[in-house]
Amino acid sequence: MKTASDVRELVAKWIADGKDKSYIVVNAAEACLGWPYVWGAVGAECTPDKRWYYAHRDVCPAGEVTQIFKTCQYYNTDGSKSGKSCGGCPYYPDNMRTLCNDCQGFCKIIFSRVGITLPGAGATSMYNTASAFTARGKIADIPKDKVCLVFMQSGDKMSHVGIHIGNGDIIHCSGTVKRGRITDRGWSHYAVPKGMDGEVPTTDKPTLRKGSSGEYVTLLQTMLIQRGYDVGATGADGKFGDKTAAAVRMFQRDNGLVQDGVVGRNTWAALESGKQDQYTVTVQHVFKSVAESIIKTYGGTMKKEG
Image 1 (cartoon, one colour):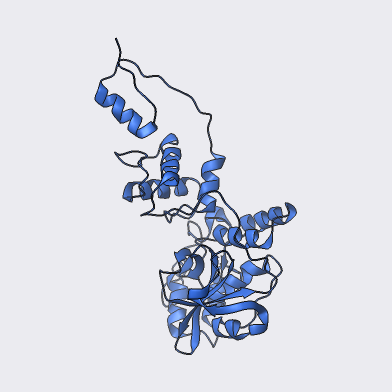
Image 2 (cartoon, rainbow, N blue to C red; image 1 turned 180 degrees about the vertical axis):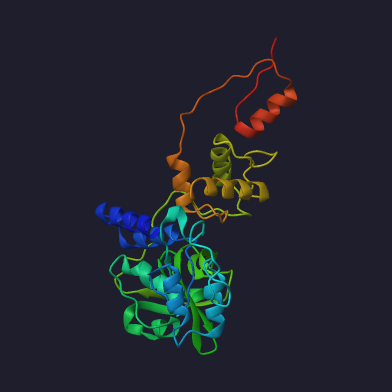
């Protein structure tokens, strides 16, 4: 998991490199995967003092108070001190702070990185401020090539908000900052903030997850195998199953990424940055079954001896 300092440095680099707003929003959101949810928070450092503050605000619902303490090892569920420090906490990687947010707070802090101020004190008031958006509407009409906000309606209110990073993929803060799909939950509306250049950053590699198949899965599996990860007995077969998902999570763990088993921009980047020199190996004097197994896993051809 990346720290708050990591993300600030990345955003500064992207701005210096001239990356457009959509690129920064998408990649900043992905860099925050795993960060904690705290009701009412907007980009606050995740510390015991901050959690205590948000839990004791008069407007904090009782259930959210319990959740704020339950997800912090420093406290017991009732808010009493557990005797533990922040050391080893997943929200305190490498003894560095992450930021805590609720759903609308997360969206606000991400879009603020590109100078866009989102309105409202919650998802409902945010969506209802029509002047803040160039387009709003039902989720069925969402422009799939646009970076924008997505909302979840409950009755006459919006109960949740997240960021559409393109092609039906969502990043939102619920429990933690996590990845999802438009079809995963009851996303009902979208809105494109003013000031966004909007289009999804171009990439030559799609987001992959369990159930994906095809040439990019084969490429992923080959890259994992080359790095010593086990994708299963069938090798690079182009099918993203349980073994490939487990290998992805192990790779993510070893490279400080959120272990969600989903191969997005950050996981692809880590795989690419670890590219190794390629060599051709000739294996002689093996039985046909062994040769076939090697070819299935690594590719290549075989030739009968004699």
